[in-house]
Length: 217
Image (cartoon, rainbow, N blue to C red; front, top):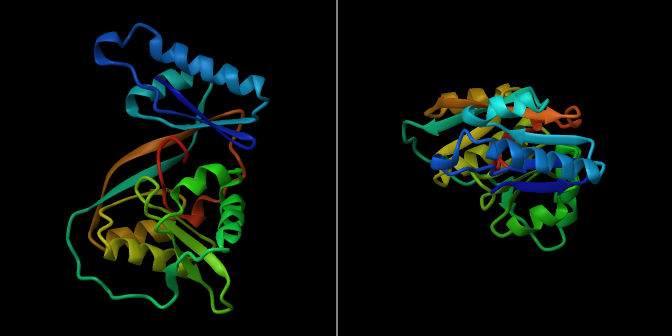
């Protein structure tokens, strides 16, 4: 199987899976080529994926290039909770559009239909003027966190960790998030390349404090 996800001018390839007994027969490559051609017919300029060690070789042969890396962290030591933060609260009805606008400004993708599936249990951070400047979606993969500044990003990371978040995946460019995790009992377990065909989108990786899932960045 193989999945393709359209996000405006970006197309994500993901979940390209071949049973072990059928590998090394060109099946994975054929499915990847089919997705690439499909996106080309849709005039998608940026084709993106996060590669496993097994798949990276195939993607490189098809023209994909590594544009950055995600760092995977797992909690090694349990730390005491820090208590509730007054700046972090649940998402209220009517605030969805602000969340969607923030997401687009950071990811450079049109992801409203995708994000709408994961708004239940969403948390946001407010700046001093009561403006939404970060959000956390626990229901999306490992718990997607986006923020426009470190104050919001770190507050939402603290909230995630305090409520049992034991896995975090962050872009290598977000050194603040990396340092936070290392200082709070997390250890690096692996890295995975984010790869692009047709060039990278104009995203802001320093504003992503935890990746949601591999098939959508």
